[in-house]
Length: 225
Length: 290
Image 1 (tube, rainbow over the protein chains, first blue to last red):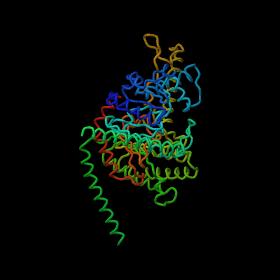
Image 2: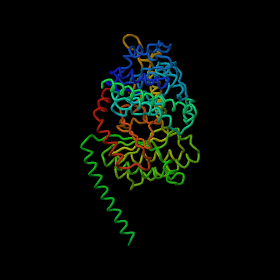
Image 3: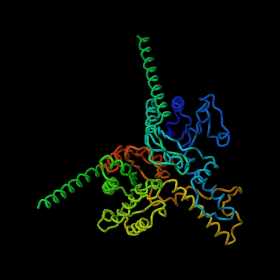
Image 4: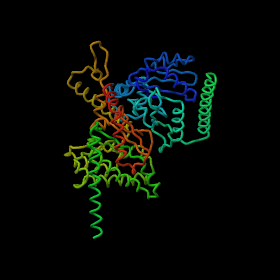
C-alpha cells in the first residue's frame, strides 16, 4: 500500500485498514510512504497487532514484522532509487573491484540478489493500493513494480471496506498476457476453484459486515426513540 | 467533379477541426500544460478482434490513432512524448505476430523520416530507447537513420521505446556505471595514483563511501534524453505499468481510460490534462521533496 505521508500520520486509519486487510485474508502487506512516516511509527503499528513476532529478517533490517499470518513490511523512498545505487556498488565490488573485470552483463537475478544483500529485497506486490489525493505511486521501489496492478483508492480519510473488497475482487478478474518472467514466477492469472472460493468468502464477509452495520444503526435508532 | 467537392469538404472539415482544437487548447493553456506525456498503447489486438479485422490491422489503426495524438500533443505545447512501442516481453509472442509487428514498425519508421511527414512539420526529434541490439538489423538500421535524420529538429521530442523494459534499463544503467568506474579506476591505477583501493572513495574517517550514486545511474538511463513524464496514459483500462518508465514515474499522474488504443481521441487527452492541472500543485510539491 502506498499512503501519502501526511495522511499516514493518521495512525488510527492505518490500523483500521490493516485490520480489514488481515480479515480479508491477505498474507503480506508492504506499507510505503515516501517520507518514512510509517517506518518511524513501526513500533505503535506492530504493538497494535499484539501477537506480532519479529522475524529474523526484521532483526537484521528492521523492516519486517509478522503477526499471525500477516507479514508487514515498512518501506520508504530511500528503499527505491538509493537502494538501486547501493546494489550497483555491491555488484561493482563483487564483479569489478577485485582487480579483474568480468565480461558478462548483469542479469535480473543478480540484481535481485544484490538488492536482497543490501536489505532492500522483497517480493513484487500483486496489487498496489494508493491512498492519497492522486493516482501516483510516489516513488515505490521501481524494481518491485513491474507487473503490479495499481489501484487508486482515494484519500485515506474516506477509505471504505467496500472499496477495498471491490479492488481486490477486480484484481482477481485481471488477465495478464504474458508467460513466465525472467524471475521464474508465472504471471498468468485465471480464475480457478481457489479464487472462486475466495471471491465467495469476500462477498459473504462484505454482506455480513454491511448487515451488521445496518442492524446496529437500527437498534441505536430504536433505543433513542 | 464529385471527388473534388469531396476533397474540398474534407479540407474544410479539417480546418474547422483545427480551429476548434486551437480554441480548446488556448483555454487549457491558461493552466499548467504537461511538459512530457507518455503513452502505453494497449488494446490494438483487442480492437481488431472487436471489429473483426485481420491480424495486424489493429496495429495499423493504432498507428493512425498515434499520429492524431502526437499532433494534438504538439499543438497543445507538450514538448516531449514517449510511446511504448515494443516491450522485450513482447518477443515472447508468436513468431508470426512479432515478425508482422516488426515489419509494421520498419514501414512506419521509413514513413516518419519522409520530408512531408508530421515529424518534420512539427520539428520533432526522434529517439529510440531500449536495447536496440535485440532488434533485427533492418529495424535497427532504420531506427538509427531516423535518429540521424531528425537530429536537426529541436521543437519537440518523440521517444519511441523499442525492445525496452524498465528492468533492462536499470540493469543497463548499473552496468554502464560499473564500466565507467572501472575505466576511471584503471586510468588512475595506470597513472600510479591508485593504491588498489581507487574503486572505493575514502572519506576523512577512513570509511569507504559508495562511488556510484543515483545521479550516475540517471545519467545512463535510456530515458535520460527527456525529463520525467508528467502523465502516463495507458489505454484499455489496465492498471499496471508493465515495466514502463518505472524509475521515472515516481511523481507522475497515472491515467487509465477504459477505451482501446485505436479508439483514443482528443477528449481523452483533454481529460488527462485537466486531471493533471487539478493535481499539479500536489505533484510539484512531491517532486520538490524527492
